Image (tube, rainbow, N blue to C red):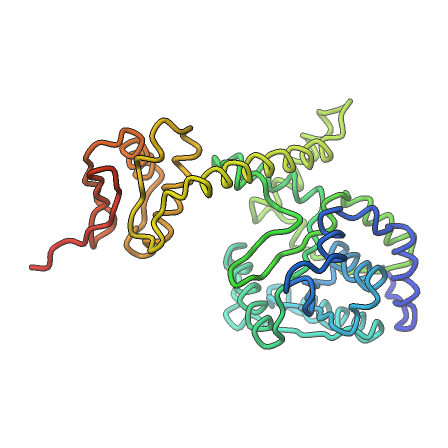
Length: 348
């Protein structure tokens, strides 16, 4: 695809904003950005910018629809160094777009890059770079280019591993992260093909990642084989819109269950005790979340608890009777007198 001249990018951004108005973006994101109700919304924004169609559309729409934020917007590009010259060309393309738009650009490279690296390793390296930039620039809001196809892909992937409502409700339009940070996804109301059609109509060029066309990763196999077959079988339905609606409903249910646990307040202020008495006769979903919260506070003491181990401990908590359950190498989860606590193994 031919590269747009440098002087064209502001015009392209404006044209894209006309094709995709603010009203087409996720309403929760628009309200959050406009109301500025928290520090993340009021402070500087960062956008993850790979140079692909989704992230390019996101950057251009931010530039077009929030002109007052341009001076405090940073595009973050991470070079995984997995595709040789193509990766270098991606970084050069992104830098050029940002220069034309007058947007601050920050790039990083993966020092530990190697052939055969997993998708999880690459993602971890990318977010470590993002975290370093957040600290340096005091950024709390990271805008990400996930769209409706990503919702369906994530749903199918997480169904395969047995996720509950919290996992199936991803990716969320507004996702609270540690340290007051927020991940922001305004494109979840739009399909991939809608974004591509809009970019073409605006005269934009973007970078294509050839590795997305290989079957090396589970997500790629879902994208290339599973998702097209699933969509084509739903001949009288918009499968992507259906998946997006299911995600919204699952998110509502998950928030309701979390609010129920909040109201019960079963974990003590210091995190040491889980009050099993207040959980008696409550739905298993509520007890499960309370136990997850208590285990999270225990940190390393919780060890590498398997799914089977968690289920056994969950059953014990539901019963409420005395239990002594091995929890890692250092101690036990002990349930007595209506409270679950962690007890260290005696040192001999």
